[in-house]
Image 1 (cartoon, one colour):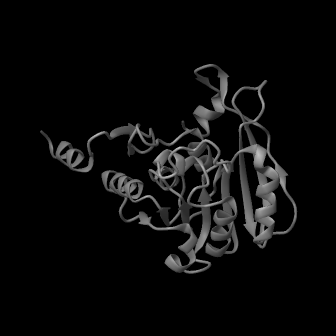
Image 2 (cartoon, one colour):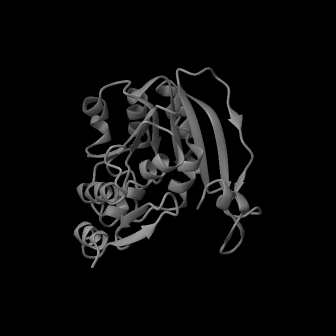
Image 3 (tube, rainbow, N blue to C red):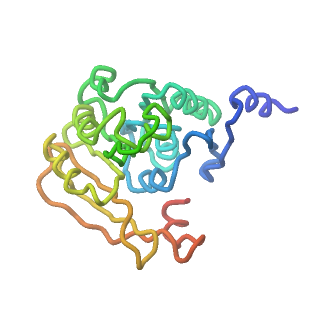
Length: 252
C-alpha cells in the first residue's frame, strides 16, 4: 500500500465515498445516505467571481464543495466555508486536507447567525451561499435530519442568510446566491432590505422547453439600482446529456 492510500484510509469514515471533481485532480468526501452536493453548487461556483487577492466565504458550506471549486477556478487569496452541522464540517475539513488545501481553504464549524462575531464585520470581498430552498415544514418528519437541514429552513431562513452576507461583506463586496425562482420576490426583498443591490441574474432551465428550476443572483453591497438579466442557462440537451456550456464553462 502506497502512502496516498494510507492517507485516504485515515480520512475516509465508514459509509463515506470519494468523488472526483474533475478539477485540478481534486476529490471530495461525501456520505450518500445523508447529503451530497448537486448541480446547484457547481453552477454557483461557475457564476461567482472571485478576483485575484480577494477573500471569500461560503455560508452553509455542507461538504465544502463551493470553496474547494472556487479555489480551483479562481485566483482568490483565501476561501472559508462556514457550516453549522458538525459532521458535515468535519467531512469538509477532511476534504480540504485530502486535497492539500490547508493554506488556501478553512472550514469553520459555526452558526451563520453568529458569523459577524466569528469573523468580524466587512471581513470578506465575496460571500456565496447555496441555502435551504424550502420554507414549508409541512410533513417534515425529522427536522434534525441532515438532509432536512440542508433543504428546509430549519437552522436559518433566507433573511438570516442575507443579513449575514451583508454583515460580512466590505462596501462594494459581492454576494452570490443560488435559489429557486418561485421565491424571487422574497429574495429581492431580503437583498434590498440589507443594502445588497441585485446586479446580475441568470435563470437555469433543465431543458429548453421546461420552466426554470434555479436562479443565480449577484448582489453588491451598497450598489446602485440596476440589474443585468443574462441569457438563460440550459442544463440538458436531452436526458443524460449536458449542453456544451455545462461541459465547457462550468466544467461539470
